[in-house]
Length: 191
Image (cartoon, rainbow, N blue to C red; front, side, top):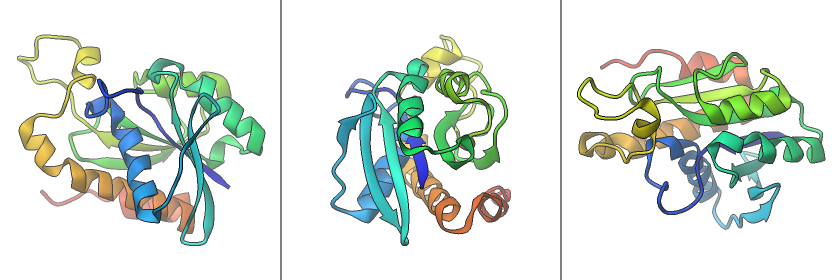
């Protein structure tokens, strides 16, 4: 079984923010399957689904981003899922907006949700990084303020297609494996 973890923050205040892309990708996967009922479990919203015949656990931690490991660790322990079978889906400041990259392990790039999971499970989880870009030079706050804001109007026009591509990448990881998925997903898109 693969555990797909969408990182984000609970509640309507954060629903449309850059930091909640992980939640939105998990929701898109659930919508594609249809009839998915999330239940409160492991300090998060949890469901199991079949993606193209493969069993997948979906988790949206409700611990807030900075404490995501407190949700992911008990789910991984309960199902005996090793880190290499856990896919963290999260926003990434260091990638340009709309770029999507898969990788195996590594650092947290300043994402405190990833950091929390790494502290709980080690650095070997799979990562689906969704680019949100850095704040523009005239942005009045910090990067932490930037990730907690809604997308700009131009970004909102394309974010659904970005979420679809991310959900496609998750499906590819589940059905074909991380290496095939990385080769397909990490190719640079023509601009």
